[in-house]
Length: 210
Image 1: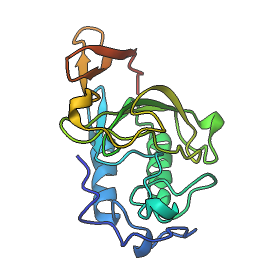
Image 2: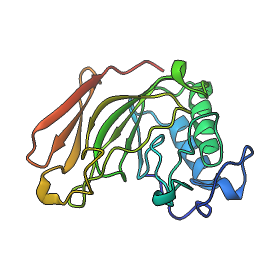
Image 3: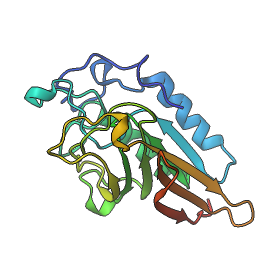
């Protein structure tokens, strides 16, 4: 589980083109720890749990659409906090690490994103999935804007409508995710569910050989 609260720099424009303290989100120590863990792991699937999605824009000043609380800094090449993600994705590809999956939250709805380098501004990575799920008991949000830096494709989304306010739990739009790995085949099945345990969407991923 990544800790983005203890290591990151202050919120701001985050439009730096070179990596430094102002653009830290994971921070160098935690980023190095993650790289070591991925490189040394003998697990079939390397699941990265992050409380922030990679490509959903979460404005620090939502009313004026300025600043960012998250990784995403808007369409275009990596800038600011995105520099850490670009470095990590390049490392995973160059090191031959396979079967990485991101489980994320924070934006108060459910979504499945497929990251496609062919559609990205930064292309030095292998395709991967990110699954977003939440909240368990909080307001349900509207869909966030998607940043094209790493080429995310929305394969599923369930949220409040864009014209609706932040909905209370009584509205029923509460979500969680379930991950199952088959011991014989190594296949990973990810299912996004609502609070009534109804399966909303599911996909089964085949493992690659490293």
